[in-house]
Image (cartoon, rainbow, N blue to C red; front, side, top):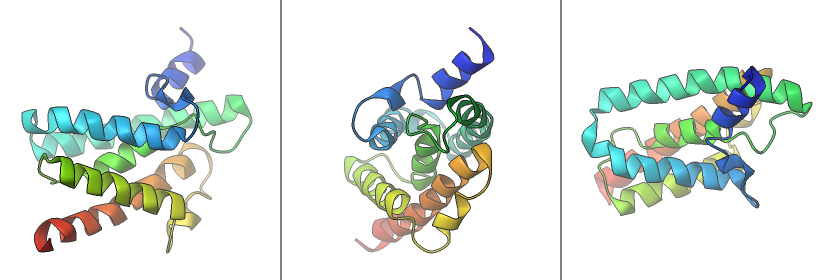
Length: 151
């Protein structure tokens, strides 16, 4: 397996990004599903560390995939959705309700890209691919935490 094939495998999150219709939504759904099953087995600090590692690996792998595909932010790259979705789930207790709220809010912020989020995807290569989803994740995180505390 060469560098491009390995990067494709990672950036598409084991080919989840190749699913038809809304690959970003599938990537986010995969991330929420994994979170739901692992969150009670790792500490919040390890979860954050894992997310930072995924984000960092995503910058490198998505840069490679963007370069070989000759297209800006190819839709099959979903590691950005995975990292952003996990940011939205920081310090969220395991619950289908809270997981669904984080999922919906992240998808809204990721698709709508309000405020400064849209400007972040102008960064070149993997940085532009990853950082706008991280910002969407932080926006969703703020809303989820408010939801948890007041609803």
